[in-house]
Amino acid sequence: MEFFIDDKETEAVFQEIFKKVQILRNGETHHEMKKYGLNYQKSLGATIVNLRELASGYSKDHLLAHKLWTKAFRETKILASLLEEPELVNEEQINRWFDEMDSNELIEQVSMNLFLNMPNVYELIPEWLQSKDYQRVLCAIIISGRLAMKKNEVKVNELFKFVEMIPSNIDEFYLRNQLKRSLGKMVRVNKEIADTICNKVHDLRARDENWQEIWDDLQYELDL
Image (cartoon, rainbow, N blue to C red; front, side, top):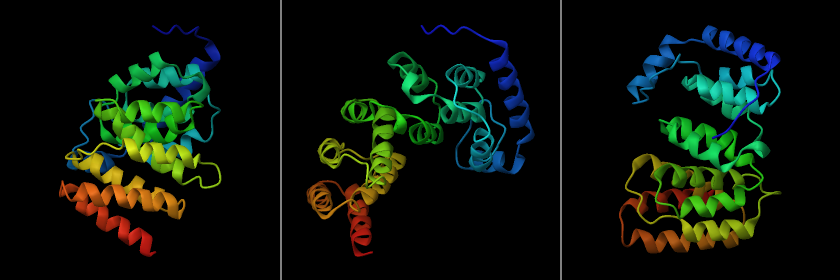
């Protein structure tokens, strides 16, 4: 169990942020989220754009992120992912956050805002891709696509490894959609990895019709 030494300054910043979050309450967005199945126990309906703008006015802070996450609102959890210090995140925290991520939206936000920037991200992706845990597999798929967007920084050899580990069973719609998006980003890195992905998807679509849609999207990406 993690232990945090509280301090008055961080508590004051936390209270300030939470007051600002409440001002961002948006009934229309909250209604739209419910329509799409995002039924959080605690949510104010603030938009992602507004939350990012709010977070941009504060420095990253491990204790502050802990306080925001523990508050357990959709909005405070997203802010926690934006304000956490990636280098200070340990395995215990990762496990706890996974246990407390109760929607695909939150998984996607934490993946892009925090996990993507962790120093050991290239070690986490293969571990998560090979796990039986839906959340971890989904995170790894999202992060792989985001890494591919950093063409001048991405470790291309690692992307080849990730492609080989992609799960063949993609019955779950949201996971399938994120995989389609991530592979679409990867094929833009270079021709060699594009060929590797296309060969793999070509074989998989012969066994599972779910892969046909991904194949069609890849052909579109390659024609651009």
